[in-house]
Image (cartoon, rainbow, N blue to C red; front, side, top):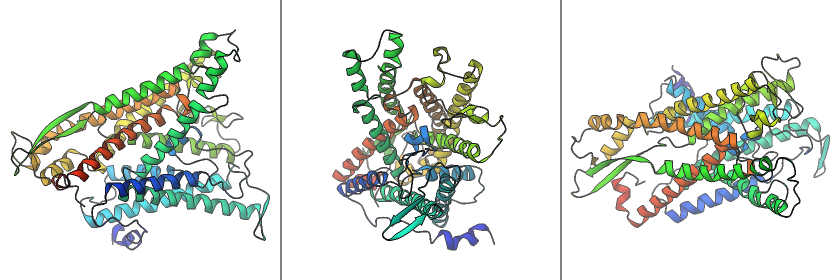
Length: 484
C-alpha cells in the first residue's frame, strides 16, 4: 500500500472551507474580502495572554513586512507556516517525489489536504521554540484570571495554544478569501501590513516619521552643522528612502504593463478575438515570498541556536547584544536590510569591507537565482506553464490564428515565451528587491515588502476590473472558463 492510500483517510478529512456552488456576485466577494481584512486587523491587536512585554524579541524582525502578522499578538507567526509549507510542497512537487497528478480530482484533494496538514505542523514547530526556548517571548511569573491562578509553566502552554490557534485561523482566513473573496488571503495580509507601516512611516508625529522629521529640519530642531548631505539623504531627511519608494512604485507598475500579447480567435464564434498576455513578471512577485521566507527560516534557526547552544561554533555565527549576527554563516546569509548594513565608508558598519561585500554577493545570488528557480516552480504548480495554458486556451474554444486548433501546437507556441519570461522576470524581481533593501524605504517596510505590496495591489486592481467586466457581461465567464 502506497503513502497515498495510507494517508487518504486523514487528508480527505481535513477541515476545509466549502467552495461556492455557483457564481459569487462581485459585491459579495468584496464583502467577504473586507470582512476578513477587518478580522485580520482585529486579531493583530489582541495581545498574547501571559506574555511579559519587556524583553520580547521578534524572531522574524525585518521579515515581518513579508510574513505579515504582528509581534506579540495572536497572529505572532503570520503567514510564515503557510509559506514554509508551500516551499516544501513546491520542492517535493518539483522533484516529483509526491507522485500526485494535480489534474486528477482525487490527487488534488490529497495535495490540498497534505499542504494544510503541513501548515498546521509548521505552525506548531514555529510556535514551540518561540515560547519554550531562549526566552524570545518572556512569560509572566503568574496570572490570576477569573478566580484561577496560572504559574509560568501553565502560562507558557497557554501562550503556545494562543499562537497555534492564531496560525490555524490565518490559514482558514486565507482559504476564505481565495474561495469567496477577491485575490488571495496571503496577498491581502501583506498589503495590509506594508500599507500600515508605510502610512505610519509618513505621518507618525514622532522621530522617524517623514513629515515630522522635515518639520524638525525646516524649523531648525535638527543639527545640520555636521554632515548636512548625509543627514538629508540617509538620515532624518530620508530623501534616498523617499526616492527608492517612489521608484519601486513606478518600476513595478511599468514592469507589470510590459508583456507579449499572443493573438487569439474563437473557433466557433466568428469575429470573437482576444489576446493572451505573457507579462514580463509572468510568475508575479509571490515567489519572492518563498525566497525571503527561506532566508527567514535560516535566520530563525540561527536565533534559536544562539539562545540555546552554549559555545556555538564561530563558523556558524556570533551575535551581538541586539541579537543580530555579526560574523559566520548566519551573518553572510542574512539579507541586507538597510544602508547601515553595507555602507562601510560611513563608519557605522563594524565588519570588514570584504565581509560586507561577501554578504551583499550572497544576498544578491540568493535572490536572483532563488527568484528564478521559485518562479519556475510557481508557474508549474499553479497551472501557468505552457502545457496547462495550452489546455485552458483549447478548452475555452479559442485558437491562435494561423495555427491548427491543437493543444500540442498551442503548447509549442507558448514554449517560445513562457519559460524564458518566467526566468527573466523572477531574476529581475530578485534584483529589484535587493536594490531597494540596500537603499532603504519609507517606514522601513523593506524593499521586498514594498515590491510585493505594489505588485499584489496592481494585480488585485486588475482582478477587480476583470470581475466587474464579467459581472456586466455574464457570457464572458463562459468564454474564458470562469463560470463556477
